[in-house]
Image (cartoon, rainbow, N blue to C red; front, side, top):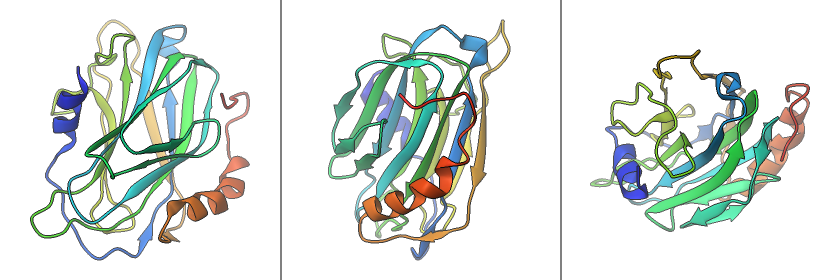
Length: 212
């Protein structure tokens, strides 16, 4: 599936309210049913319109093997430290080739400025793709894009987070689990927030899974 199709799939119906705090989400994906499979992990951020939001990804870990990433749009940093996707561009993506192991985990935090009147919400999504860029998994994503996770900015601490099930036949499913911590104030830039969260969450990383 090409980037334009995935971009359109992320523009879903979402609500809004006043921004104050944001929840840090820890994502854990059991990829053991596909261990050894060549794939790509795609982090996408879609700009629905004003105002500005950003997502920061930290503590990425896997026992698989990452390759050199490619980017599109408003992307800063990488998965070995802090990765930030903003909405200076309509579509921003960090795309990393990976030979899957047993697990992938990371933390993400999104600022929560709700959409202005007449604008769509900003949205963050996670995909596992095959080496050619098509969805690796048949998921319950109603848009048919194969997303595992979509988070829409709605101005609440939790945002509008939806996860989708792996419906692929002939093997055990890839599963995704989400946990949260207490809401934290969102500063003007998420870099300060992410830096403060790193020590808090590093101790929670699963044993035997190492960042790449």
